[in-house]
Length: 259
Ligand code: PGA
Image (tube, rainbow, N blue to C red):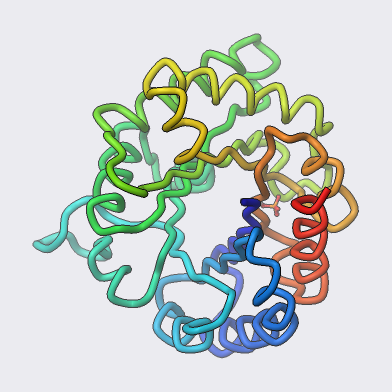
């Protein structure tokens, strides 16, 4: 399975979100029905979830949210529970995106609680990890990412068919237009997988975890990433806002599965 996940961030209003969702569904519906080894996911902002959910329901395009809170209900102003996301039709949810870590002080401990809440409600967490340029330049790239993965997965037990996606996103690359080399991304994917293997049985890591790449991915560089077996897909920001570009990326992901 390869994943192509579009993170729309706070870029669109509700009607723009509906129009983009409808266009992606139109472009991918026929192919997606047969190319079931690729999962295409759209992550609109919370206010658009209900309407985008109506558009994607019953199509090969799935929906995810961009964040959640770890409690199911209560006095948590401004937050939204995994339970409500599920009711709105979400199957996936981003957690720990670097923009939330940077602007909203989201910590690994918060990410961990969100992962557990999502799993409890049958959603697939997409856990974003990645080092800053400063951490990379000071030789802390690996230790930062290992620690992000370890804390995010602390106490997590996957039961049944529960899945987790880890998105490796070098933070300075996001939105830069310049992706890292596929070899460098693959090296980090191997590191994440070996970290997971210290925490979970090898067959669980194999079947229930997928590690994907994010950061300036587009239709020009995606094939290079997916040529690396260890890279199971991509989390896409800017290019996900362009329906033709995003549909082209879905096709590239489908071709990568066939090869
Ligand atoms: P980008 O964003 O593709 O625009 O670099 C990726 C992300 O933020 O997940």
